[in-house]
Amino acid sequence: MHVVVAMRILWELLLVMLLTLCSKAIGTKPCTPRGGCNIQSDNSNYCLSWRLAVEVNNIHSWRTIPTQCQQYVESYMTRGQYKRDIEMVISQISCYIRGIVLENNGTDAWILDIDDTCISNLFYYRGKRFGCDPYDPVGFRSWAMKGICPAIPAVLRLFRKLIDIGFKVLLLSGRDEEILGQATKDNLHNQGFIGYERLILRSPAYRGQKAVFFKSNMRKQLEEQGYRIWGNVGDQWSDLTGDSLGDRTFKLPNPMYFVP
Image 1 (cartoon, rainbow, N blue to C red):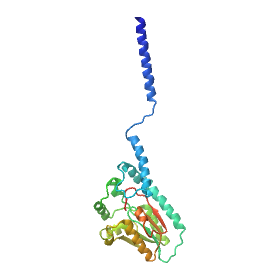
Image 2: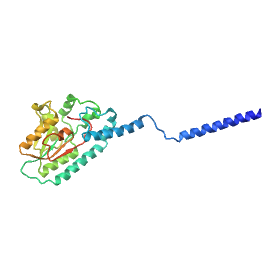
Image 3: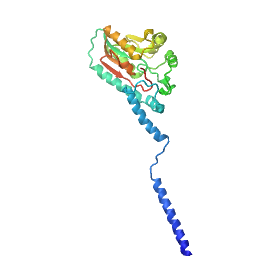
């Protein structure tokens, strides 16, 4: 009887020891949660790749950013990386400019886009979840009519430098000339864009046409008028593709929307 009791006690002790060892072994394994942390890490990697594909024009005609990338795009646009990327582009433009010998006959031209090149629509797109919401033409027109878009500082510095050097700066935008013309002029003036050669907006004849078609035609007309386009800067590939692009094009980052 005593032997049976002793064996049972010994067995229970062995079982407790075994369970304790198993518990410790499991406890030493790294935790791999299935919740937000891992998903966020995967999203960050995906969204970084998505943004790169957008910037190099491998993704076309997208209407909204991926829903899971809202936080990533917000962080990119507001926490410094967007600003640093723009500064990098401007530094490359400055290097290019130093090698140019102007003809100084009034035909040395440089083209700048307006929206999210000269002035920023970031405040507007914050309300559109940084591009998660589809493009709202009525809402954007109401925003643009306010004329409160802030200048993008690095581009404003470039603008002033181009004028000081002797370039004829031409501002080319797909904004509607009849509806947004005066608001755009006032907005640019109030933000320090003063002294440009010409502001070219979309006339009624080009309403409904794709931006790449409209801007190609405008650049071609400028060349026919004798201008030599040394540089062309925009945030959309439709600013930088098509005909009569100029000697060099420079793409500013914009992961919030796509203009065909």
